[in-house]
Image (cartoon, rainbow, N blue to C red; front, side, top):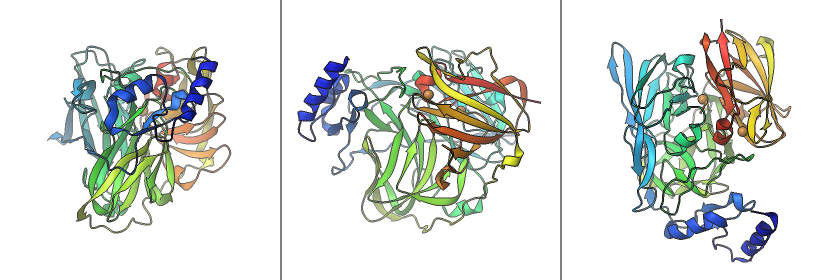
Length: 488
Ligand code: C2O
Ligand code: CU
Ligand code: CU
């Protein structure tokens, strides 16, 4: 769209009464055919940012779908899980069957795996798609050959097995396809799931943990639909990646969930292609208890939090006698929490959740920097595109490193496999307590400088690399990824 047309359109949009559909181009066409459910649309920063915005005063109509737990079969002390990725169909909108990808024949997404620290697990992944894919355990501390990155391809009709011991603490992590060049599309079509790791942390025993009852997975993804109601996948090479008009939560549009009164845990996972959410509780507060890699040392009461692609955040909300809502700045309501008349029994969040083993400057033996920038009309890191045959970084096993991440243009999310890092500074400042825990993904606005520290002391492999990359999936697929070996 050229500048004059878009200026004209903006002016036309401004003339519309408040509450009317202030959207443009394809979003408008689609929004008008899907009618009923979504009420108003906001025009934020011009056409690219238009969304279907939910009106808060009308109650949500669709129950939140909760992905089922996948139970293992235990043999010789090993917990075996079977996942099969394939095509499926899901009802996003009444009476429209949308083609999706999913795991285990679910209509969309995949089952939730609940693992325990100390377990030995074997996860079999069978590929029933007609193209190559992989399945990566995002946030997991596992050997490189079990990590499911772009080298662990699963050809159509074949099976790949990841075996590993769960050596990390309690955390909410997730899994998604990661074949180079098709991560965005496979994830967008619906192939992604949550993994919950439990451990023996006694502080956590008083936190809500009944899956689907007072411990709710909240997987946020924005989607575009064609006029025929099919997923409209697109890669946007721009700085923000591809942003879509409709918010889905566990595959549900504008959902509610019935919960007991009292404390409720929400496990927030941003599995979107590029959308960054700013979440808050309408008429209330949220208490953040865990970041990507596990519990914070103390709970932090927040007005809002930023959830960038790949990020997880566990929050506790206090549900009283009337419904409350998790809301996003752009989409408005994300999830309505409706009291179901029972109480969950537990009253308080423990004042101390965990003891975070702080990485100190004196441990650091290597410094590296990673600059995120354009590469022609693609995206690169340190002036290079992802090359499957080239290892960019060799880390010595046992070393603690300091990585400085910068970007001048575009919005990015720095994600690294295998390790959980700590943020030392954001633009030279010590991170606030909610960002001071273990992280594997961090949001990078243009002009920002993030300094982090990571230990590479769990697994070495002289041949199979791990990945670091931008988790804006458009950017990742367009080359913004590199490979590192942890060598002995
Ligand atoms: Cu969520 Cu390299 O991935
Ligand atoms: Cu990952
Ligand atoms: Cu990026």
